[in-house]
Amino acid sequence: MNEKHVRLESLDILRGLDLFVLVCFQPVFMRFAQALGKDSWAGKIFQSLFTHVEWEGFHLWDQIMPLFLFMAGTSIPYALSKYKRGEGRTGQLVWRVSKRVLLLWIFGAIVQGNLLDLNIDTLYLYTDTLQAIAMGYLFSVILYLLLSTRILFVAFLLLPVIYTVGMLLTGGYLPGENIAEQIDRAFLGRFLYGASVTETGEIVFADWYHISWIYSTLNFTATVLSGTLTGCVLKADISSKQKLRVLGIAGVVSLLIAGGLSFVEPVIKRLWTSSMMFLSSGISILLMFLFYYWVDVCKRGKYLKWLKIYGMNSILAYMLYNTMNAVSLREYWLHGFKYYLGDYYPVLFEFGHVFMIFLILHYCYKNKIYLKV
Image (tube, rainbow, N blue to C red):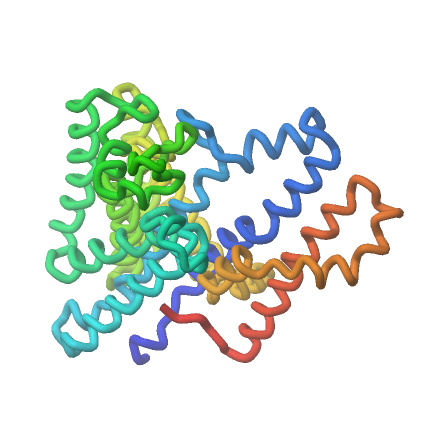
């Protein structure tokens, strides 16, 4: 079979699950929890699972972005192995990778970088999941193409070591004082999210924003590489049983490393610490293990295939949710339910949003229309 037609169905379905939770389930469940109240069972579940931890710790919601990066890496061996073997044209490779990185960066700037303001005073350069994917993908592709699988594994381990040593040698992990945030402030300056410029020209950084991007690119890349190495295993010419054994061991070992590392470095998603990277990568690997076993090995994924509607158009799903508002349209069609639903009307209103996105994605899926970057 021609390599370009080979798709890992479990990867599409797992990606679909990640996007379904991100752009459908969580937003609707959030409105439902708000309607019931924060002290209700739904409110407690929402706070403990579907919100980001303020600083140290890890919730289910903190896994969504790492899984997105992980799966971007898993697709690399499937998409670029011919170039690694020297069979493709270099110009074609450079164009393909450059286009993907540039489009991801632009889409990220549209979603959270205020690019569409067309105003330099409100432009933020590096502040979105898609831009983290772009940078992690770029460096992972370079390393994948240049290194053997064994040396690639060494690189995967070396990146978090560099990150953690750098953090520990420069004062640790206090919000606003750690080296990761200081690097962002030094290099991004006015273009860091939340930053503003006073009349005297002084840059003021928001005291509520403590997310790292530039220094954390070390571990963004490591997260993508964990997926790349997983893709190498899944694409290897070995039995499915052997692949599952390797993935199972890798996932458990990654979790054990995260547990051991957490004694010297806290799990902080906002800084993308190495302990967080190993924890999220371990979870991602084990999820890939489960989906690969159930969908590709056991062939029992029949009732999960609808998730491919999200998974095969993940960037489009993400962009639609963040840029397609359609408030007036929803208000026109749904406002009559306000009287009957009361506090639960926002649940229906949010459902209207995600349902419109689903219809668009479903149409694209049926007609094989994909936003490729």
